[in-house]
Amino acid sequence: MAGFVDKLLNIDRRWLFLLVFIGVALPIVMPIGLPVTTTASTRDAFEFIEGLKPGDAVLISFDYGASSGPENDPMAEGIMRQCFLKRLRVVICALYPLGGLQLANNSLAKVTAEFPDLKYGEDYVNLGFKDGAQAVMKRMGDDIVGAFPTDVRGTPLARIPMMKGVRSLRQVSVVVTVTTGIIGEYWITQAHPQSGVPVIVGPTAVGAPKYYAYLNAGQAVGMLSGMKGAAEYEKLLAAKYPPLERFYKSTHAFTATKGMDAQTVIHFVIILFIIMGNVATLSQRAARRKAEAR
Amino acid sequence: MTPHVDLGTWIAALLTLFALSFLYKDNPLFRFTESLFAGVSLGYYVGTTLNQTLMPNLINPLIHDFNQSWDLLVPGLLGVILYMRYLPKAGWVSRYALAIYVAYYIGLDFTRRLHGEVLPQLARAIVPLSHFDAHTIFYSLVFAAGVFSVLIYFFFSKEQDVVTRRVARVGIYFLMVSFGAAFGFTVMGRVALLIGRMNFLILNWIYPLFGIR
Image 1 (tube, rainbow over the protein chains, first blue to last red):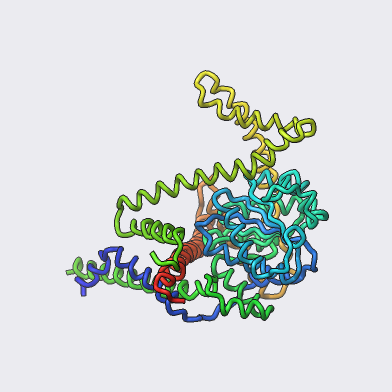
Image 2: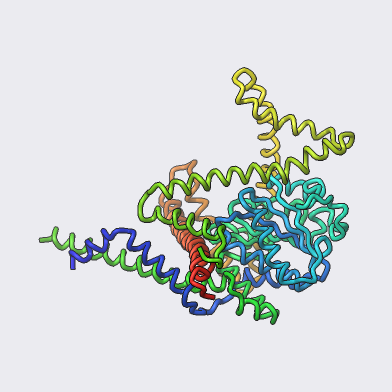
């Protein structure tokens, strides 16, 4: 027994990597379809956007990079789909320097292809990337054109029909910040107090704990926490909109719901590791005490 | 190479494998990928900032509408001055630009911290218990006990006595719970990134390679 415990405690960590690798790969190859339950913070975000009227402006800020795409992309795309189905005007911008704009372009191209009747400049606009997140938000609170004189294509905002009634953040019904790092916090702690614009935050799971404080204080109206939050949102969308139910069931592309199968399997594997590690340590400690008592 | 998988997917797949190879042990392929990633990131950052920020917000207005935009020369000049630090004799000039930059962000961050963090969080911590149901009252009491005990734990101006030490101990338990939650979320986040890469490798690279849909 003691020999087995020692072996367990000194196991080459690469075996654990291999187990994690298999644990992630298997559910992707053979999807399980585990159920996803929704949480209040995600439902609040969903219901807030559901409560908006057609024509209301929603600003979606891509404040993340490629490294957190698997968590953040499904959030941004899910919210865009909801906005387009509700005929809300969608304003896209990116404040994260390392890939935010590219991811915004990718997601926008992907989702607008699903809604061929949408017109650029009337239903949605892409403002592009701007450096200096805090300063940009400060300016947008007073004057969006001051921060973004042109859209991503170089067209002055004055010539874009849907931006005529959207001069500052005060005319935006909600800001959705899909975020990694601190930029999401800036929307909540700077843009919201300055202009009063409600904020929905979609952080990565790593960043989610700190946003609960803002959520509890009513500084954010809803939150999608990591891949789980995105999967919850997909479930709410599928329940509300039959076309999206068909889409999420049939798509070959990556969705958060599919990712949650692997996430759940890996959590089981990690819990197993934790239990095994603790049992082995306690057994070793007990054996040592026994030996000392002799 | 099969016609099902384009060159970009091949490059991305191989670079992903090179990056993951570090889990086995450090190797030249990993170091090549690491350096390539750092270089591409920097190039992307410079290109995007030039095209998306400097051109539309500074250079184009100065070229096309100088009479209305001449004031942009001031921030533009401050930006250039920042780089004077690389000239040994004129390096001191960059401090003026840096001072203005720092002062702007201190002013901005000061109000942000106060109006966006301290005051709303303080207001949330002081709630009347009379208007809530039993569940909310219990939740609020736990919340208040957590805030109070953690604040006591971080109060370093006076040596702790028997009472404050016990309260601080409760604060430690609250902190441990929060660290545990944060760790759980961190694991979930990191696994999500692995899921994303594995999805890419399996669904976008291996499946098309073998003609599987």
